Length: 304
Image (cartoon, rainbow, N blue to C red; front, side):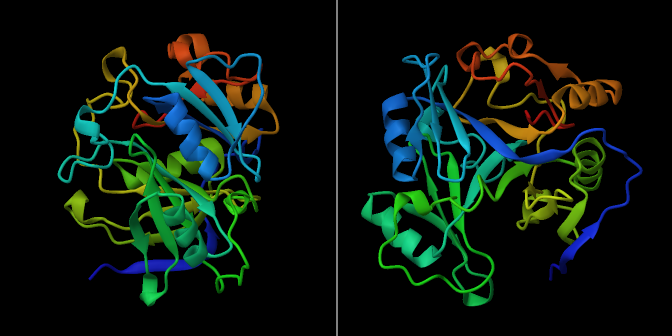
């Protein structure tokens, strides 16, 4: 039996003194095979297209009621047989951004709304028999979660699209990693995710580690769910970017930070490779970035 330790968030041990502070999730960079289909799907989740002079037939910006920016850009290729390389192969689990999760006032009503929109429910969470989350996939089978983990579902006259994620930009992103202990400490020391919310004893077989470890920023309800079932060789590249071609999925996750230049300098001096959008080399994602934004990778190549 897996022994799960859930607790009020407890500070991790780290000597890091960060000269900056992450404030919240700011955006997701999502590659899609067909922009019209993606715009329609995310529109049903309450995202509205932002009028932007940089918009083209290959990239668009959307934003939800909670302020999360969705940077959609066309992938270079589709997944083979529309099988998502991060989620749909039972015995092969690469690192990657597995899903994004949004708070909703009622999971039951969110489920009914999604089904009414013609979106298939592909999974659910029922801890203790209580429905706490449901999942669905975008047209490229990128996973989105809709959850309410605390309290009862609100009584609603009608569930509306703008209720998805309207309390804060996003609750958490799922990030699959190889070395849980080392990665949890990396995110604490480099980015300030110092609050431990949930851990459990690991099985030697990664594929049996089905529940996440969860960490949180110290001064913000901003979580990461570490997905622990990664079983691929560390020498393998990021599967969504392998071979210089971008496949559909959550390619990068963006954070709002109070001092961007201090963050860039700190990460560089800490041995983290920091890249501009030009150095990143994803042509279709260029021009999304704000003037002082930059990219970097965690130890498993997950792009931030």
